[in-house]
Image 1: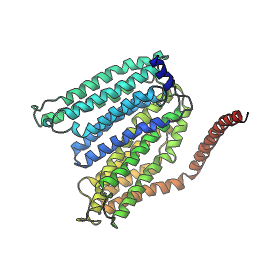
Image 2: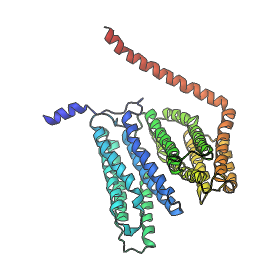
Image 3: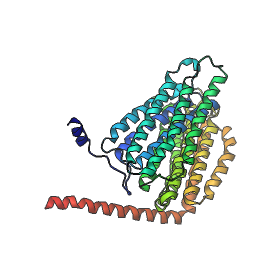
Image 4: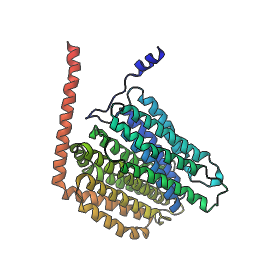
Length: 438
C-alpha cells in the first residue's frame, strides 16, 4: 500500500519526445558541474606546472565521460519526471564529492588514500546511477540494452584502475609512484573514449536533436561562465579596493569571453543544430557522438586553460607590488593564448564534422594568435590581455561583415522555425482557455 502511494505521488517517468527540450532539473543538475569546473581551475591555478595541467586535463576527461553517459541517459528519459529525480540527486551528491576530492587525488602518496578512494567511490555511484537509469529507459529496446552489456567491461576496468591508483602504497618510490598513478589515469581515459568509438552506433538513439544540442550548448555556456567567475575570484577582483588597472583588466576578460561565445553560438552552433535535425538514424548518432560528446571536450579544456592564464594575468594587474606595467608571470600568457587556440581549433573541427565547411577567418585567427603569442610575452599583463581581446573582437567584426548574407539567411531560418514552434505551443495552450470558458 505504501509503495503504491509513493509511486502515485511521484507520478510516472516519461520518455524524451522527438521535439523535447531541456527541462529545469537538468539545468539544476548542471550546477554541480559549475563547481567541478571551478575546482579544477582553482586547483590548477594555485600551482601551474606541466604536471598539474596534466592532472587537470585527466580529471576533466574522466568528469566529461560521466557527462557523456549522463547525456545518453537524458536522451531517452526525462530526468525531472517520476522517480528519476531521486536517483539523479544521489548522482549529484556523488558528483559533488567527486569534485571536492579531486585536489587530493594527485597529491603526495604519503598524504593518505582518503581523497583518492572518495573519488573512486563517487565515480562508482555515478556510473551505477546512470547505468540503472539507462537500463530502465531501454526496457523495451533489446538492441539498446545490449549496449549496456558492451559497456560493462569499460565500467569495471575504469573502476579497478582508479581503485589501484587510489591504493598505491606510500612505500612506492617517490619518483616512480606519482608517474604510475598518472599512467593509470591515462589508461582510464583511453579505455573510456576508445570504448565509445568501438561500440559503434547500433542501438543508440537520439530521439530529440533539439534536446541533445541544447544540453551540450548549456554546458559550454556554463564553462564559459565559470571562466568569468575564476577570473573574478582568483584575480583578486572581489573584496579589494577598485583600482584603475583592474577596470580594463575586468573589461578585457568579459569581452574576449563574449567574443568566444559569439564564435560558436552566433552561426556555428545554430547551423550544427539544424544539421543534426536533418540527419537520421546512425548518421545522426555518429554526428552527435563525434561533434558533441567528443569535440566539446577540447573546447571546454581550452576554456579552462585560458581561464587559468587570464586569472594569473588579472592577479598580476591588481597586485599593488607590480601593477599594470608588470609582465605576466610564468606560463600565464602562453596558457591564455594557447587556451583560446585550442578552443577555436576544436570549434573548427566541430564545424567540419557537422557542416563539412571551414571558415578561413578561423584559420587566419589561429595564425595570428600563434604569431601574437611571443609578442604578448614581452608586453605587460594588461597589454597581453588587451592584445588577445583585440584579436578575438577582430574575428567577430570580420565575420559579421564577410558572412553577413549567410548569417541573415541562417537567422531567418532559425526565426521561422522558432515562430512556428511558438505558434503550435500557443494553439495547444489555447485549449486550456477554451476549456475554462466552457
